[in-house]
Image (cartoon, rainbow, N blue to C red):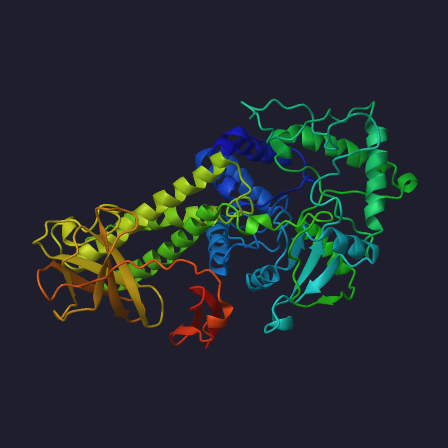
Length: 564
């Protein structure tokens, strides 16, 4: 939210204004997270009309179109589809368009799943950047930075996609120039940011292009263009202008571009280069018109990502595990909430539940789960403050969906009081609510499409309990002392549920033989490997229909897991 206030509003406000001042000007917009905030909270009616016109005339182009540019190593395919659907849905409903190209330049490595997903989403070309430095150097040398990627062995050429790998300069204008002491090769002027952060999140700003430095800057730009042209099969060079947050002051950016492009084109015979504004659509159309045959790449990926010797970017696979786990649970809850709500509406179209409010509750978690898939989100590479924002949004969204699911259960069971149905949304820490002599109900929902048999764990306030199904038949259950608290117990209920259905269990406080089995805690310490001649050679098997786990009785440690 602070980033929005600091630069996103200015970026889109100034870009829209500047695009209207020159028909030749172009701009690509990537992540919908910020654009939607600008559209909903900042943009005026006039600016919205301008955006529609710019899209019609091809001056503004949305690429990727997802809520964020998702990470490719630690995200689930379901969540990738979710955030892509969230962004694409907004673009189609608002503008009637579907993005045609990707701009996946910043994730730390490139998975073979992504080109398959984007091909299935209807993209015509895929663009990546961060791959192993040695491999990129070899691809540059051999002019193999462009190829047709068949990311899925099973789908093969039915879902292939043309892929462009950014060269060694990546997706930013080159940051170093061979003269002066400029802080960056951006030519974007001196901008004053509102309350710039101390950690330097904003880029260094350089002086604008003037008549005094125009020729020198143009020559430097042309030299860089020619250097990069040698790495590709065609003479069409994609030369990105700017970098992260670089269009905070779009007026200076476009003024500098106009001056440089005009100078280069006026001296094209002398310089050997012509330049024009272009979107990704313009560039890939130019490549397509060359009618070349491209190399086919199979399902090999570009992971892990490495920038130099002994510097593989693999730490983010496990860093900030709390955020990663929380994002997974939020995603699971969202799926359960959406499927539960859908079934409820189909079966109870005339219910008293407010559908508009329910959709808003689901939307809050859809947005939160989508945004955390960002390549600087679920990876854990963000600042602590941003991580806290992600957690806050996820918790808020999860609370909303839990409330919705509880409301649905209450309505379907005609409960008059909220305490008639137990839900962790109302009492997450203190155990099953209610007095010891009052029966309580636990509703368990299976969001999967197949039958499951599993254990459900519930915190309870006392151990003498019995559990019964809808017909009043006893259900296998066990009570254990809770490792989290000395004042509560964990009640384990063995449940069998059909796919996409729910069951209601009654929990009663009982005395005597009919109470749930009360288990005892047994801790096995690691054994010392002494007296090898006395060690048992047998392994203890524990298994089900899916896996077999073998334990070593000599050490009390797990020996192996085998898939059946």
